[in-house]
Length: 636
Ligand SMILES: Cc1ncc(C[n+]2csc(CCOP(=O)(O)OP(=O)(O)O)c2C)c(N)n1
Ligand SMILES: CC(=O)[C@@H](O)[C@H](O)COP(=O)(O)O
Ligand SMILES: [Mg+2]
Image (tube, rainbow, N blue to C red; front, side, top):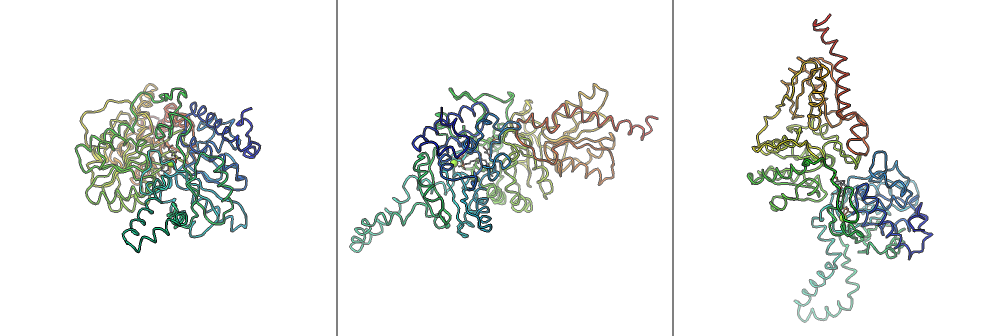
């Protein structure tokens, strides 16, 4: 029987001879490749940590010890070893296994992750609680080199090194973020891994001693005799040692026996210890080894050929339209610069980076820094387009306020993944940006109905002298024709897509063409609904909203964002402030967590599919149409 079949809990690892763990690793890799070829998911990261995860579960008892998987996209092996192998075919599916650790999913998942760089802070919190409770267990933060580029990781290390709490940080260094990793820290880590660090120091010292002539010669001889001691002096992880961590490494992250030996040695180390392991992202599958960026997050694929099955509806993605349009704009406007936080391909900036390398900045996983740097660029006359997913911009909220909006700086926030994203679930849906940006001063907020509108909004944004945001959904666009000429949209101006007087729907973004199709259907039922593409969440097209609400007497708003404080709330506030008291139905995301599944499944569960909209609006309008006509004396 295959070893993987014998593993129903981490304790079963001990029943396998250490020498056979390599075979288990092979079987787990095959299992993950096979399963993820059917479900899609984060393949490369998990393939890179098979040995490390086996060694961790071999050495530690995670019913007692704690582990926080940073981002958590690499935790598939952890899930397989902790009794979830049989459910792995439900990975990232509706009501299935999460693609990330979830405390509600398993006693072995000790902290929810999904957004990066939280593991050290969370682990330190657990270590402090452990000591305050006079308990004894190890706390581990498993963090990648990409996730270590975030300030939050250093905030955690800074405090951990100061408090000298017993805890372990395992730095999984594969020299990759989603894209190749960036930043000076990455360069430092590479020097360590390449052994260059010590060599560089030794050469420098030798050069200095030689330059001292006869005085230096005997010292060189002595130094040669103390090479090992000196080597330890320049222990490669000096940066971490200075931060209060015992540095161990670099360790081969694919050598299970070595990993077990190191983890055993430091499992009860009384101070913070950082174990630096070197791994290969995508290891064990030729396609992901060759292209770890592409195989970071992958749709279902043919495992023999590596061909990825197309899931789009054949129309361009909003991301690709953004990527092409910003290039068009940058060709004409030399002040345009583009910023990403470690997601060049996800945000569509890969081509921009090739065409305008001096105007493209990948800041690493550092959204706060990205926004404040954009403020600095803007105040000196540049036009920064900050491309950060809606959910990840949450991390830079104060920077949006403090370093952009309060100074009224012309930064453009391009928020991809605005709305339900699907398989990544609650940590990744872009549901809150309408509500979290709407209260901010000076900002103009747009959401396009389709890819053509996105282009015009990007063009409009490039002309503004104040901050603005544009939110657009993950995945395929509407498939409309693109205007050749880009035109400026008048700020705050909506557009009427259909006339009617039984009700008016104010729709925004991905809800606009759904609302139009619903209104067309309602017309066949003799219900005449006006449809307005709001285009702007802020400022609202007040005259249109007040006029339409007055004329139609029944109002519906539709948005793919949370209702609390969303677009619909803004419309209601406007009507109330102008004493237009009409029945209003707000359609959007209710006040609850939206889990994972396909976007269609989730929108169905949220009653936001076209079919649901049709019945919800029809019932609402019928309910009030009679009362309204009676009030107006149009009927007895
Ligand atoms: C705050 C935040 N920004 C961006 C992301 C998107 N993201 C997910 S994984 C990843 C790269 C992580 O690199 P690393 O930590 O080295 O892990 P690896 O995939 O190399 O194992 C990024 C940028 C995120 N999850 N959280
Ligand atoms: C793990 C992580 O945060 C990213 O890989 C994210 O899953 C990317 O999302 P998209 O697939 O929408 O680009
Ligand atoms: Mg990495």
